[in-house]
Length: 147
Picture 1 (cartoon, helix red, strand yellow):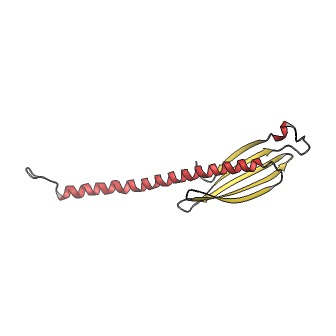
Picture 2 (tube, helix red, strand yellow):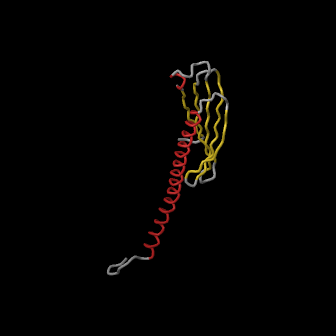
Picture 3 (tube, rainbow, N blue to C red):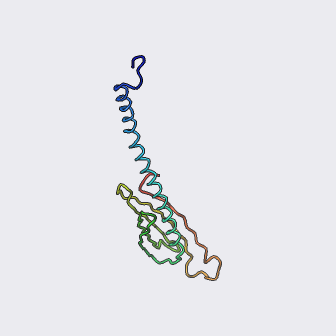
């Protein structure tokens, strides 16, 4: 600009628009990826909550008989599929596995699994004994995605 003139030249305006375009070209993909990661974290949290809830329900049934089941749970707009399996491992031991699967917003399959071993006293124990209601379990988490 020369002395006495007010405003910006065409070169200055075009240069500033180019700089702004480069900044936006970098910022938009970063923002979209951060948004996707936050959505995935929320879905993982919901899945973990459903997983723990189903594990507690399966553990409450103190039947040593092998069972399995499947259900769908809807949380918000997302539908999760839960599968569980209870198998007899040996004398008084029952293995429990609960798995939840869902598809993320990019239509990729995600899953989260919780495994547990539960001790159930044998039927020869006196059922009136306070030890009859005692159960021991140990959960193990696994997932198909990095935490």
